[in-house]
Image (tube, rainbow, N blue to C red; front, side, top):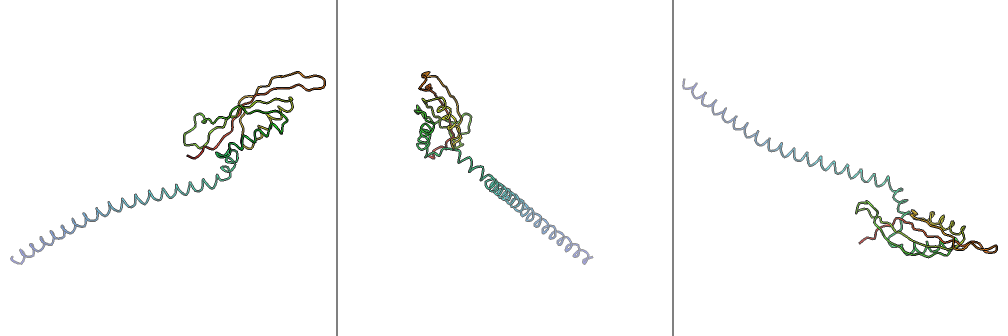
Length: 183
């Protein structure tokens, strides 16, 4: 009986020891599983960021030609004076006497503030023959910077005679897209 008792005590101690080892393993494993789950989540987030960055790189490369074309149609922030000189030269080219009345920088209506484009609005008046004024309007439409003509008015200044052609007056307002100056 003594042997049965000591075997029973040894079995109970072994069972308690096994139970303790089991509990210890469960506790340490669950902590590792939590760490592993956090690491997997971090890794997935990093992979998503990397995929997004690759997608953005591809988008930048795919739109390079379109962005270059758009940039060519904008008046550069530092080239406003050159643009005004170009508009003045249109008067000489068309044969009309051209006067620039005003030049204003305006915000694009309903545009988000982070968009780096604004409008350059030009108001001018011109005098000359009907043909020279129509040529002037055509030249404004063909400026390298895409012009949007807002208003054109023509009026007869003098009817002319048999020897002299009629003189016309024109007033025009147009806008072009301009890069915002970097502050």
